[in-house]
Length: 113
Length: 115
Image 1 (cartoon, rainbow over the protein chains, first blue to last red):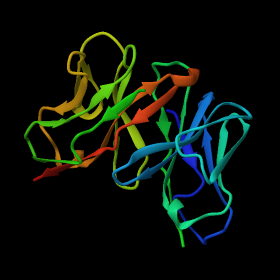
Image 2: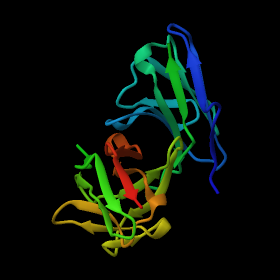
Image 3: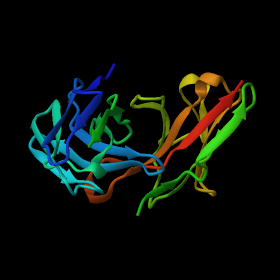
Image 4: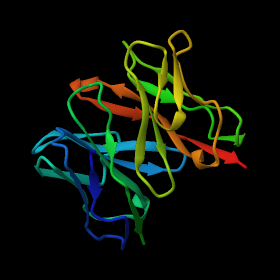
């Protein structure tokens, strides 16, 4: 079974702090994704990566950056957390095969005070 | 541009009754369509997908979905709902723009199954 793990289930941070969210997948997938989930808005793509050290902006990249130094690990960074970044963050991975689905981690619920 | 719409924020159904969760899409070319379910405080779990072939697709937990090209719909169905089916359901469509393999998700539909 594919396994996607996220470093924290719940995080509480203060405004202005630098926040790191880590995601690891064990299926040797080329593609990895970071989404945020907010009620009524569904999942919105923040950033994705299609290869090591490669990244592409999604629909809402402002205020975020990412890092992919190893194939299995994709990190989301909030450079200076703000209250409007309080959300559920979901990581996913997929192979390059277009019929294949994305596999999701359990999510990190981030509260910025 | 590719898009997907879930017209209902919430669907209520009695246990044992059939359920339908609606999804419509807009794509250029052939659609690749997916359904996911999210239980409380969990990530998304894959339910089923339509790539090509039979318009009726069967998936996990007794769910199925019907692809209708003329109506550009991909509704999720189950003949007999269970209380444990209560969850948040997302429809998604494959997005190939820019040459990348991504998904576009609908806003989600909350299914509430009452005993």
